[in-house]
Image (cartoon, rainbow, N blue to C red; front, top):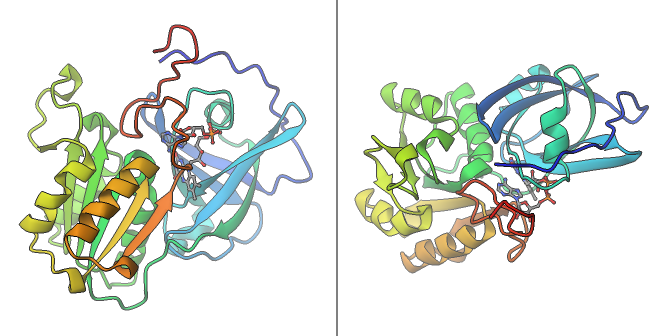
Amino acid sequence: MTIPEDTRVIQPESERYNAELVSRRDETDDLAYFVVRFRGEPVPFEPGQYMTIGVFADDRLVQRPYSIASSPRTADEGYEFYVRLVPILRFTTLLWRLPVGHEMRMTGPKGRFQLEPDDDRTHLFISTGTGIAPFISMIKTDLFDGKPRRTIVAHGVSYARELGYRREFEQWEADGLPISYVPTVSRPADPANAGWTGRTGRVDAILDDVCRDFHLVPERTVAYICGNPEMILKAEAIVRAHGLPEPHVKKELYWPKGKDAGLAGDTSSPRVPEMAGQG
Ligand SMILES: Cc1cc2nc3c(=O)[nH]c(=O)nc-3n(C[C@H](O)[C@H](O)[C@H](O)COP(=O)(O)OP(=O)(O)OC[C@H]3O[C@@H](n4cnc5c(N)ncnc54)[C@H](O)[C@@H]3O)c2cc1C
């Protein structure tokens, strides 16, 4: 992926900075986990909510919302975000340039994409790409509280290497927790997916099978869908057709429908056709 050079000057100090980038771990060239910690006390949040993080570049604050992937039970260590690098000179190209220890602005939490307390229905978590993030916070928090829910996690990506948090899911399954991990890759024929033996196709395309294979009873199931808006609409239609009533479907859109900016779904590596040589 070629990204135009980002020459904006990132401001190292500001009285509006209230947090710090405390760690970063790269999963692939364009997927990474970032932990941002408030300078003072952490603010409480509910699993599924998001924070807005940003920095000043060329004298203006550039900031974006990100689902918190870590649990509020570990908020004093910072808030983890799972982010895809979008090859447009907006926020993520700044974030990728930030050294660990750099100051940032963080506000929030916000968002109503939350679990219901003591909900004993089966939870069907559906996501593409980085949309897995809020589900990690939800599952980790339930585990901290010793109250894991019956959960099925359908996660769609283009390439198996993009299955963020795969190790955690496999460990939770191996530990016998009531969590079923259903990853799927949408480009099985690509050499990068050689050796992949799991499900194939886009995540919405496997949902019918998932509903059947796990014998999901609509009245006893709640679906949470997060990520790419096109996928969310398709997935919603499928679970509704399976019988889930509207209040049993909760959605978090990462960008407005129709604003794909040529980024080939969210499950693929972002492309920016309008930028020369990057089709
Ligand atoms: C409530 C909420 C929570 C979010 N949580 C996350 C998160 O946990 N992780 C994350 O990576 N992003 C998340 N996003 C998207 C994030 O806010 C930014 O839009 C994204 O990081 C791109 O920022 P940008 O400034 O580089 O480009 P922007 O100008 O913000 O977006 C440009 C285009 O990039 C594409 N795009 C945006 N986000 C993604 C993505 N995640 N994967 C693929 N393509 C994308 C869309 O086509 C969008 O129109 C969330 C958005 C919302 C509204």
